Image (cartoon, rainbow, N blue to C red):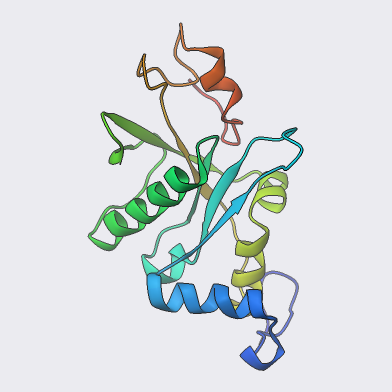
Length: 172
């Protein structure tokens, strides 16, 4: 079976390692697999992203930066739940109920380097299991807890900016 990711054949479960099988099982059971990526040396910002949204909810993958793993995991699961109930993500969309007291904003990213650098398991899944490439994803951007300001807002805390790399094209 050919694909847009270079013509590789779709793999079968017999050739998968335990982590790959876990990814597939999570997508089948929960609608997505969530990867938390962190730097033990604290030189890079922690982030988490989904694998499987296009299959389970017909939406692109999502990524969140700079919060605790538990909060990012919860946010991704809540987005998946909302999408399963009909939410259609779009660039600049405000998403409710991800963080108590604050909306978050979905920002579209199609930068090939950002995709390669940040969505490794999603690339593996879509290329090997579906025969397609990842063309883009939504970065979920959160505001500062005290101010409610987003990274592009005047007067926002530098901590809010520093905790979330802007992988999307900034037009704010």
